[in-house]
Amino acid sequence: MKKILNIFTNNYIIFCVYALIGWIYEVSWYLIFQNKFVNRGVLFGPFLPIYGFGILILLLILKKFMSKKHLSSNKIYTSISLFTLTTFIYVTIIEYTTPKIYNVNYFLSKYGIGLLLINIIVIILVNILIQKNNKLKNIDTTIILVFLAIWIITTLIEYVSHYFIETYSHKLLWDYTYDFLNINRRVNWDASRNFAIGGTLLLYTVQPLLDDFLKKTKLNKKIIISLIIGIPMLIDLFINVIL
Image (cartoon, rainbow, N blue to C red):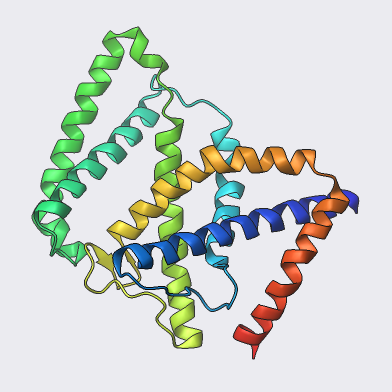
């Protein structure tokens, strides 16, 4: 029972920390780019639950993967890493040179062959270099693979969340209709890329500090912290979502 309670309080505190970080991120975006304060989400309090759940899902899927080294001597790891980096650079260049490409299908029909060819060339050339130079075989590609995984997972989370929020609450909390490379206005290139960058930074910087704090903090203190945050959040949730 004590072990279960410890796991629950740890995960709840992690959830709250990232729900708060997510709220700060989105509110800051509006303050910087639109010069106005917008309380994002459906709660009165400074929490965006989607970010908390998102990080918990990322940790569940990626924590063990992050603890191991995935070296460039493995052709699969190298090829996936190169594909990620090349695609990131290629699409970013197109975004800033031809920004009014909203439809993914249009992008693929016009630039897809170029993207495929440049990826094939880069992957072949780099794999040849790695085979000829032993020093290049020891490059750790883990962070790039984690970056790609976060990109895919967070995009799926955002898409599914948008679908359910729109379907069941009939609200549009975000709309990417006129944003670069959007899919059904639910997800777009910029948001997914920012989530991937932010998620990678958080898992490699904030999460180790948070893990260390949770290990050193006694269970009774973690319970108190959870209750102090949890009770107002539950009241907030009840008023804004259930009622």
